[in-house]
Length: 304
Image (cartoon, rainbow, N blue to C red; front, top):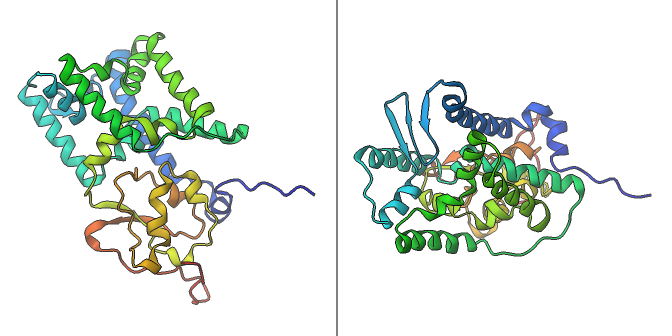
């Protein structure tokens, strides 16, 4: 008889319930859609809480926020931003330094919803196989966008940046903007699993560098309880960051995920039925690897 295929996260769903097994995913969607709604309220409904876009915005006519990646391109292109723009970039730099640069990818970027949809659909359709592009490619693309700005004297990347194109498409309607977003979706669906966000996007590469030493991290605090179900590896957009923290105890590696590639999306926390992962702080140290204790008071045995 053919073995039944187990869905990723099924154990967590049974142990935690629908809400418990999706709480961080739902929080991310609320954040992404909420931020997008704030930007769209002005042009679509005339309610100007936030003016601008993700490159530069002014909230309540007071708080400036500037994308430091766009600011860097502007400087290389030979354009000196206004003081308000520089102040906005400083605020954003401080925020993403504290919470982890690639939090932008998981909690703010609207294109993440497009690529997550492609990944979900790819799994449901059973699409196997994937092109191979090294994750270092995104850093090469990041360098190319900066060189392009310096060579052309323009912020050329923003003309084809899927994030900017999606924002323009939602405001101004159909056009070339949707073609770019559709191309990203089809690439992730048919060509390469997690291809755009995980291997190519220079925006994610920039914010990863920005969060190199950020204090907020995911930690495999209860890694002794791991039962090797591999669900965390399946849902993680950057699965290579998990293994050192989860399986490195024998080599003296702490349970903290220190890689700047981690997006702090919390999906590993959601899908783990054993509650191996949680959010922690870098300066708190690696912390004890304490297994969960069930009702009978005896620690659960697990693989390190």
